[in-house]
Length: 208
Image (cartoon, rainbow, N blue to C red; front, side):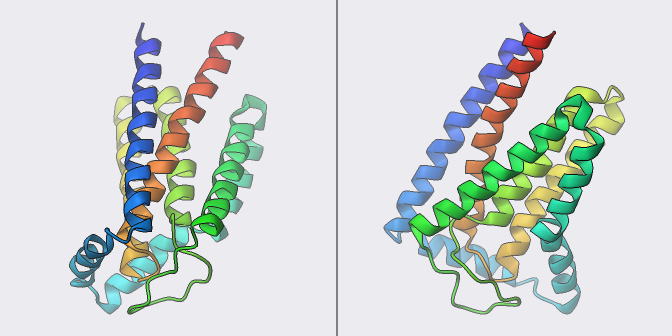
């Protein structure tokens, strides 16, 4: 019964996130979201300082390929026998390729204003947001289902969730993404994650 409820909730999450993603995409294509993006950036940029910039660069690096790929490979090797390793690799590849394809289709230029760091390529949706949500989000799924100690479980989930959000904020702060890029990346990746975890759950039930 509980498993069915969880699956249904994941389907609801998937549909809700896809709706939000396509609403954002439509507004991006119509350029109706520009003022929203500008307001969010102004709000975040009030906190610009040397210390915050250093922290933002560190956080954004945690969501980059330089960190996620090595961590993904090491984790996958350690968990390969439990099949979780395979899921981690497949998960990351699908999200990364999807992001690259979408960026080339939509071709939204990066913000032209003040940039603290330089990035190449297109802006929508945010690759850091998509990959970090999918990668660290899958860790949350594994932690929730495998760690019995409630304190360790929920502290880990909260900390990882905060990290994912901060990675998205760091991209806006550094001037390489619009807020809509980040929100859309989170929504699309969360929708995919809901689908992917349902597939994992179904396979696990068949084995059991």
